[in-house]
Image 1 (cartoon, rainbow, N blue to C red):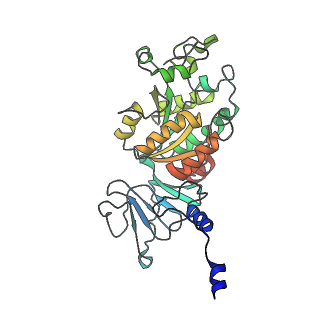
Image 2: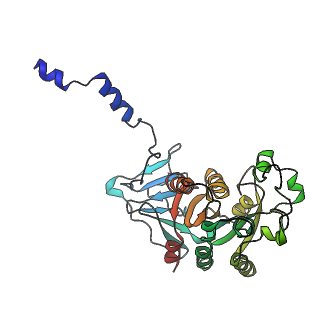
Length: 323
């Protein structure tokens, strides 16, 4: 008996290893999560006015239209679970909604009139071959040319969010940002670019226009009343107390945002994270974002966009859902 007990006892080293590998009781297992497991019961997140409902079949309803049968969340709760015998059937899809397949074997149900795609910085300054080499950014052009008309057909707003500075704004930009757009202390915002490109990222200049066919795509939508051009003056389109983008979203009751553009780990990510902080639903369109940063940068954006900030999908999946 003594030998048997001794052989089965846990050594201090083994105990320490076991403890260090165990998930802390109150930890949220986001980091290191390859794929979020599906809920086993219908679950409601949020509050009475702003809420999502996730179902065991993989549907995540972000339309904020149908609470679970038990009603509003109790004060202070962040999720509401139904007992297995009372799991509700997800509501039927309405004409005003779309179910978008996303990574992780999920479908996100959106309300069309409350949704917009935010297309960031697809401008000549970042994409034109005469100014820089950005092949992966150029690869986003065709998917966007296909995606935008499909979203327009369902009354999803098309928001082109771009750098577009005024002379007054040049006096308000912080030094860290000024330095980031200069090389060896030269150039930077408002400086003259070669050829016809004009002053760097100033409103109305050729380098600030959308690249190639995207400018025509925007003009087409502007005339139809589906597309809106929104200027920004920071890496993020939603920073500080209020920006033109944030104001537009609030005035039009938009709560769900698709994200596209360049650079994925800079202006796109900055806008996405600020939108996430403000409570918008964030869906990243994987084949419509790109960056010139080293390997791993894009992967990190996609990992967190799908694991923490919201969801990741593709233009093809959206187009198929909208057809």
